[in-house]
Image (tube, rainbow, N blue to C red; front, side, top):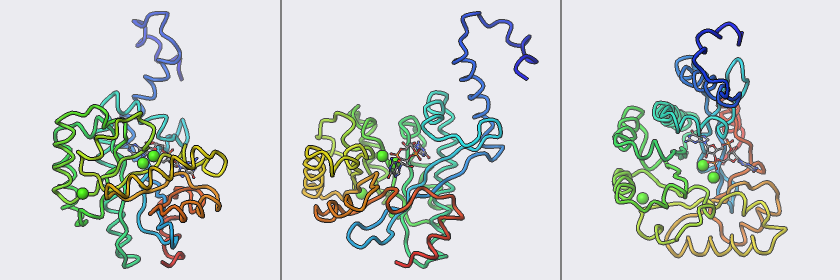
Length: 278
Ligand code: C2E
Ligand code: CA
Ligand code: CA
Ligand code: CA
């Protein structure tokens, strides 16, 4: 099939690498992914560390393409960012995540918060706060049940625009969390100037907490610092029972990871919801 379109590519220089051709092909496939309904959300439980009870769910994007199979976000989110496709894709994610949260309330009778990842380009789009508020209104989801996860790297620019967008979202009642905390070589000063509610300790620290005393110290210090700033803490990447004991002992509020559940397709998550009484 590759050879068929050759004439159309005749203007390409010979040094055109295979990598960039793959990229182009992936880009054109990604452009059509929304209309072809190839995107789907998986859902990973976030539990209360002390009780193990479900309190929130993170929406994680998957792309199921006939030619490429299941594509994980690390492989296509960067491309979506570069091409701007993240704007419509991100809107789709928000809409579907919020709708799911409304549905779970109907299924379980409980308020289950939904966490949605927001990429830098999407966040900086001037219409982003409006889009969020419109979707909340359309779905009928209470703003405090939506948590937006913003990677620490985005906060390093320390710009006035970033602060304004965060304040606008905060005023609307949406929850804000710092994702991948500890990976951004950050100056911690942004924590006091931005209206965050939650801090997610990156899994790279959590994973070695039982093996590396330095990681254990860091996690303890992060939990204490977060609490003294009035922030709640989520530990990501919890895989072993021993880690749950450590996190409970150190007073980490919430936990997420394969130990509790892998990210699940919608149907499986709803099954999990029905069988895991809180
Ligand atoms: P993230 O936001 O840090 O999401 C957590 C990642 O860790 C997920 O990978 C999840 O499957 C994985 N994970 C969860 N528990 C464990 C564990 O116990 N051990 C290990 N080793 N991994 C665990 P995933 O789903 O492949 O997503 C990768 C990244 O892609 C996310 O990292 C996030 O930055 C990005 N992403 C995913 N969905 C979206 C989306 O809808 N929009 C945007 N902008 N980015 C997204
Ligand atoms: Ca996240
Ligand atoms: Ca807030
Ligand atoms: Ca993370």
